[in-house]
Length: 64
Image (cartoon, rainbow, N blue to C red; front, top):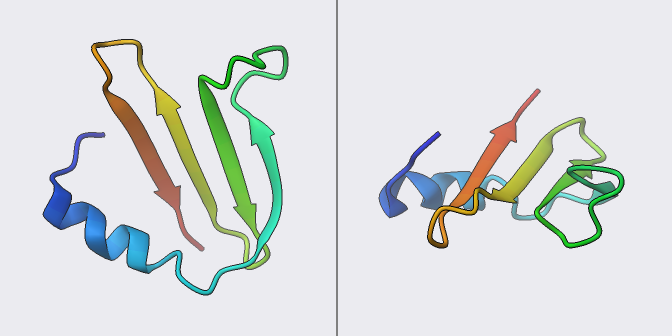
């Protein structure tokens, strides 16, 4: 998913005030930190990963 900065602002605003219930690496054996999932107490998940394509960061938000 590719987004412009203007599209990212509402996404990040939706995270304000949420409480993180748990986090996990994208790949259990990947401690290099290529990606993480943040799981919130309301059931939403925020995923951030690096695609190894010249600094491109990919993120996704799954809401309830």
